[in-house]
Amino acid sequence: MLTKGFPAEECRRSLGGFAGAEFIVKIIFASFVVVLIPTAVYASSISYTGTLTSSTDVVEETFTLSSPATIGLQTWGFGGGTNAAGDVILPGGTDPFLGIFSGTGAGATILTDGGGNAFGTSLDLSNYGNPSFLGCPPAGTPLIGGLPQCGDIAMTLTSLAAGTYTVILTDGQYVPQAAFDNGSLGEGFNDFTGGAFCNVAINGVDCPNTSGAYAFDITTLPASSVPEPAPVALVGAALIGLALLRRHRLHRRTR
Image 1 (cartoon, rainbow, N blue to C red):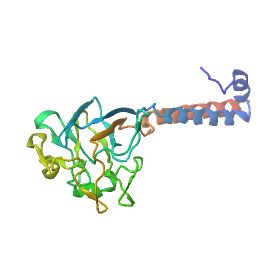
Image 2 (cartoon, rainbow, N blue to C red):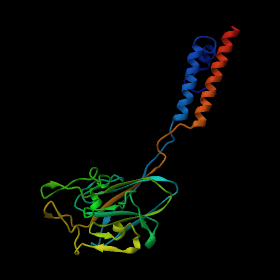
Image 3 (cartoon, one colour):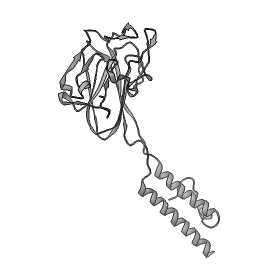
Image 4 (cartoon, rainbow, N blue to C red):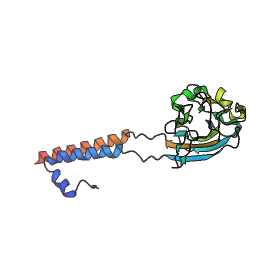
């Protein structure tokens, strides 16, 4: 059945003369376009906000992937910004630690970036200098000690396998041991907080972000988000084009 863009009267005329070649080219081109149109891909996000009740409080959230996907983690509490839910997050929250673990409970193991670095970071960890972990922008960079300071975290994990995962957020000085030895959540935490939020000097001054407020997003995007031509479909489109071309040549010879 012919679709919009190829009126029936035009088709009848085009198969008879020089316009037939042009029509065949249109058919072949249309076949390739149909093959290359990507399937609609939609990102989905969950936003979390709250306040840590103490410097050793732990926020633990789990999610399950039914198929491989790319996962993005983004915090907002330190520098502020607009989260995935469209809410405006004020700056001033604590310097966060953010980590992602495979599984749930004590046996959950921290994920790594393939280079031995755990996917968990804060201002106080050596791997915070990894550009892929810095979350500013889109989060804000408040002036501390006269200089803009990036304290938020962004992490992207590509083609994460189907399964259940646990995201941990704590104060940046309350860090799971797993971040140091790529181990499990059951190893417990190292407490460097001294009982205070953001217990660290930034640009030569004590960190002023002592509210314990936090905000972060978990965003998923299907791993196969880039369309690729299907070889079988492309072959089919080519065969259709060749058949039409052969029919056109035979028609001209009979004339």
